[in-house]
Every structure is written in structure tokens, then in C-alpha cells.
Amino acid sequence: MQSSVPTTPGLGNILMLVMARDLRLAVRHWDQVLQPLMFFVIVTTLFPLAISPALDELRRIAPGVLWVAAMLASLLALESLFRPDVEDGTMEQWVLSGQPLSLLLLAKTATHWLLTGLPLVLMAPIVGTALGMPQSVWPVLAATLALGTGSLSILGAIGAALTVSVRRGSVLLALLVLPLEMPVLIFGARAVDLAMHGEPVAGPLNLLVALLLFFVSLGPFAMAAAMRISVES
Amino acid sequence: MWLWFHKLSSPPYAYRTVGLMRPWLFWPAILLMIVGAFGGLVLAPEDYQQKDAFRIIYVHVPSASLSLMVYVVMAVAAAVGVIWRIKLAHAVAAACAPIGAWFTVATLVTGSIYGKPMWGTWWEWDPRLTSELILLFLYLGYMALRASFDDTQRADRASAILAIVGVVNVPIVKYSVVWWNSLHQGPSISKLAAPSIEGSMLWPLLTMMLAFILYFGAVLCDRLRGEILRRERNASWLSESIASS
Image (cartoon, rainbow over all chains, first blue to last red; front, top):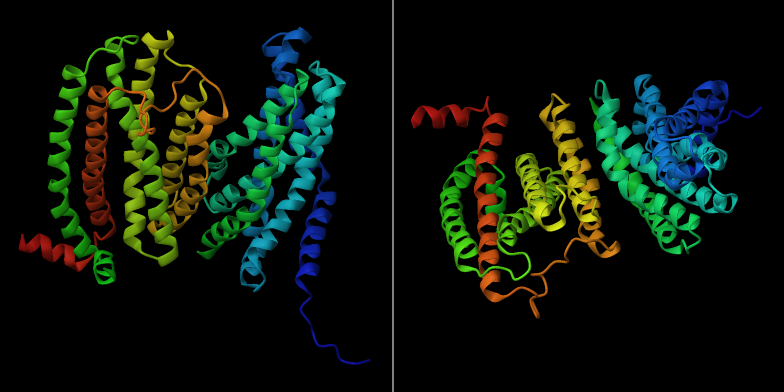
């Protein structure tokens, strides 16, 4: 046996390790993964109860209801994005590791989207149907949510990194992140609304893609800068 | 130029300079405000459609421009603070936030007073009104984040990141009027080539605009001095200058 010199794995491997670790953690605490999804379903249930059980009326507000519920669910899930790792010191090691923190956090956020955004995308057509949404809208609904929740995850991750060291940070997080997320909500809900009226949806969809690309390219730097401030003391 | 810049970043020098600048901004602002208000409320003719109600634009439009401009100033100051690690720039950003928030409130209040006779409602979910409201939320979030840290330096840097991220929203606020059709009238003074507002109505508006900008500068000086006092409360130069005065 030759003595093996410990080598640092390449960046690609590291990012894979980060994602695999979070996925494994999620499988072991699968009930926590389900919680935002349950929240999404329960919030959408509130609207028929509060407004009217008539499907005609619900159909009109369905795009907005689904989008607001998805936004709140993704906000709720942010709480657990960085907090455990910051509390047990893992994040400090990441900051000190010499690897690009922005990419590590982006990988973590991408995993987070797989666990919180993607289930919403899959669940939304079912909930939408319950609100009287025609089946023809499903692809557009899923597409807007897939693009939109990606943007929401990145913006949310910036907010989560900023507030992770603040006591009772979750309300503050909502205050910071919701105004920034509003453009995503506007374009997402509008695209679904247009699709329900049988009109072309390319405009708002393109804007959603543009927002997502913009946030993916610049968001990680803000996340890393915010995390450095939060971990530092 | 650079020497001046570096000197300005030292708190005692900045404290004195800002104190000297303030009256040069404040009194011209008051003077221009009087001139602009007289021009707008008395000299300008009545609008053939909106009658006298249009005169609120002499407060509404400058407030709206300032509410956006202050946010940009704040974000630029925050970015300067982060990039060159200038503490004074963070103090400027901190001083900007409440001023900008109040300009935003003024815009919303005068806007709804304007909206009542024009549209028949106090509030209309018009994209421009809504984005102004979002701007207010951004200011409030910025101030809330700043208040949640005990350590000033961490508050500075964390809120700077938020300001820089939030400035992304400012163009969206600005261009929302183009992206959606709405009943809000389009901007009437940016098209200087063919302004859709008559000269006798325009000059008081421009005067008020300048007055508001100078007024912002004066209030910023005041707030900045307060901010410097708070940050330097244990510094020796401060107790010396108080003792000598």
C-alpha cells in the first residue's frame, strides 16, 4: 500500500458533494421537505373557503392564488436553507475552505430549489385543477413556476444569508425578500392569466427567463458577500 | 481631487465640511421653493381639463423623482462603502434611507390626493402607484435590516448588500410605466424636445425640482452630521471640539 497524500478534489466534485450531502439530508428528514408543500396546498384551500366555492369565480383568481401561495411557500422554506449549517459551524468551514463561496452557495441553493421549488411545480397543476383551471394551461403554469421559483430561491437565498445571524430573522426575511420578488410574481401570474385567455404568453415568459438568468449570474456574489458578513463575528 | 476625497472621508473634516455646506443648500432650497410655489400656485394658468387640481404636481412630481433618486444615491454610497471600505459612505447611505422613505410617503399621499378628483378613487392599483409602494417597502426593509444589527459595521455592510440588490428594482419601478398600459399619465417633462406641458406651467415645476434636490442635500447634511456624531461618540476629536466651542 502506498501512502496516499490527501488531495483536494476538483471544484466540480466539491459542488457535487455539496448537492449530494443536502439531498441525503433531505431524504433523512423527508417530512421537512413536505412541510412547505403542505403549506402550499393549505393556503390555496383557504381561498375557496374565504371567497366563494363557485368554480367560475375561482378560475378567474386561480393564477394569482397559485402564485402567491407558491411565493409564500418558498419563503417559508428559506428559513432552513442556511441556518443549520451556520449554527453548527459548517458554513464557517466553507468560508475558510478557499473554494469559491459563491459557487458553493449556488449549489446549495440549486439543491434547495430541487427540494422546494420542483415539488411546487409538480403540485401546482393538481391544485390548479381544483381551482377550475383548464388542463390546457398546465404547461404554461409549470413553466412559469419552474422559472419563477428559481428566481425566488436565489433572491431568497440572498435574504437568508443576510438575516441568518439575526435573532427572529424570519419576519425580517419576509420584509426584505417579498418586495424584491414582486416582479417575478407579476410576470408569472400574468403569463398564466394570458394562457387561460388563450393569448400568447411569450412576453412574460421571456421576461421570467431574463430575470432568472440575471439572478443566477449575479445573485451568487451577493449571497457570498452576505454570508461572509453573517459568519464573520 | 483625490486628496480632497480622502480628507472628506475623515470624520472630523467631514463633520465640519458638511456643517459649512448645509446653509448653502438649505436657504437656496427655501428660496426656490417659494418662487416655485408662487409660480405654480398663482402664476401658472389653470389646466383646461384638470382645472386647479393639477397644481399638486408641483409637490407630487418632485417628490416622486426624489424618492427614486435618493434610492440610487443610497445604493451608490453603499457600494462605495463596500468597495473602498469608506465608513463615511456607509454613513451617507444610512442617512439617505429615512429621507427617501419620507419622499416616497409624500409621493403616495399627494398622489392619492391627486387621484381623488382625477380618477375618483384615493387608490388605484396602477403599476406606477404600486411600484412606488414597493419602493417604500424597500426603504422600510433596508431600515429594518439596519436596525436589527447591534454592531454598526455589520449593519453597514449587510444593509449595503441589500441596497445594491434593491437598486435592481429601481429600473423596474421606472420602466413599469412602459411595460404595462395604465391610466397613469405618461411623464410629461422628460421629453424636453416637445414637452407636453406648457412653458408657464413647466418652469415652476423645474424650479420646484431643483428646490427639492437642494432641500434633500440640506437634510442629508443634517442627518449625516447626526450619523457622524452617533458613530464617533467616543472619539477624542469630538470631545475636543465640543470643549473648544
